[in-house]
Image 1 (tube, helix red, strand yellow):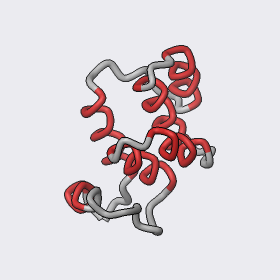
Image 2 (spheres, rainbow, N blue to C red):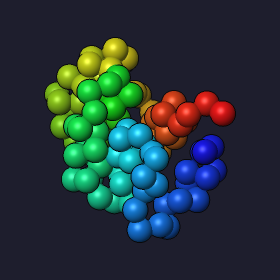
Image 3 (tube, helix red, strand yellow):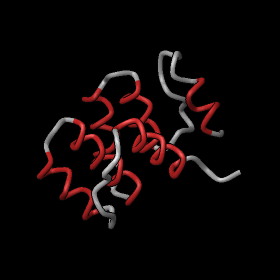
Image 4 (cartoon, rainbow, N blue to C red):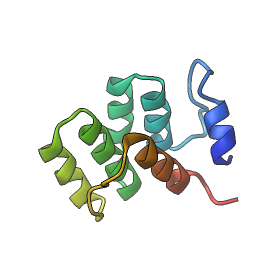
Length: 97
C-alpha cells in the first residue's frame, strides 16, 4: 500500500486488518477518533508507535506527554504542522514495496 491508497481508505468504516497498529492509529486520527487512535498507538511498543503516540499527545495538546513519547521514539519533537507530521509518519509506517 502506498500513501495514496492509504488516504483513499479513509472513507471506509474501519482500517484494513493488515495495517500495523501505528498505521491504524493514524487512520483513526484522520477520522477524528483520537481515543481509538491513542488505543492503537498504546498497544504497540515499537518506535513507530511511540512516534505516532507522541504526535497524538502533541495534537491533544499534552506537550509534556508528547515529549516523553518523542524520547521513546528516539526523535526530536516535530516542529511543523499536524498534517505535515501525519504525512511523514504515515509514509514512515507504510511498508516499503
